[in-house]
Length: 112
Image (cartoon, rainbow, N blue to C red; front, side):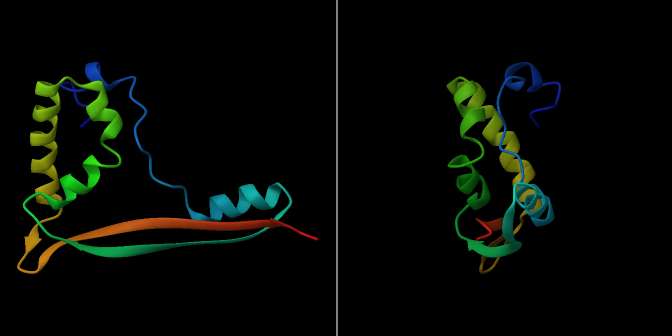
């Protein structure tokens, strides 16, 4: 949405939360620096409760820079539009909303 014609002028200078690289990218980078590396990824499957649980989750993390750049009225408009997209992408089920959450881990240490 930040790249859309509606939001781009207001959010062009905002540092957006980007996804992690692949574990192999971290392994290559750290190995190149002389480290022994273990790198892996996993996806946690969270079951969230509430009316807009993914929107609520993301407001406390990746949306913080976006919301900080917008006044209250525009932030409300952005959240309404973004919430519509999220509800389509993550529909609720009778037991909650399934939210896959990817994490990448890398442990590096210098060889003795």
